[in-house]
Image (cartoon, one colour):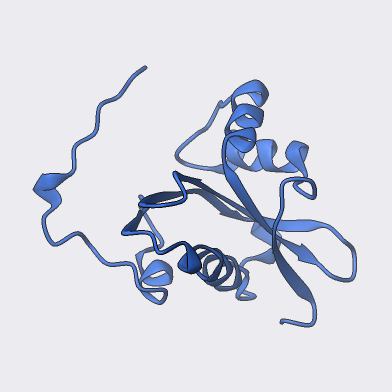
Length: 139
C-alpha cells in the first residue's frame, strides 16, 4: 500500500472540487455544505490528503482546526468510496497524528458515528467524562 499511496500535509495539493463533492454529497455530517463554506474551512485549517502515486488522484482528505499549542479538532475525514478497504483511512489518521505530535498538544478531539475502531488504533478513546463536553449549535 505505501508504494501506491502517499500522505501529505498540504494546502496547495488539495483537490477542492473533489473534497467539496465528498463532504457536501457523500458525508453524513455535512450534506449540502456550500462550496464557499468548504473553501473557507479549508483556508482556516491544517489540511491533509492521501494521493494515488500512479494517477496523482486524491483519494482521501482530513482537516484539523488547531491553535497549534493546546488543542486540535480532527474533522472532515473522508476516504473515497472506491479506495476504502485499502488502509487509506489508517494511513491518513496515522499521518495526521504523527504531524501533530511534535506540537505537544494537550488534546485532540473528533466526532464519529461509525469509525471508532479506526480512531482507537491511533490512540483515541471515549472521553472519561463525557459530561464535561458540551455543544452549542449555531445554525
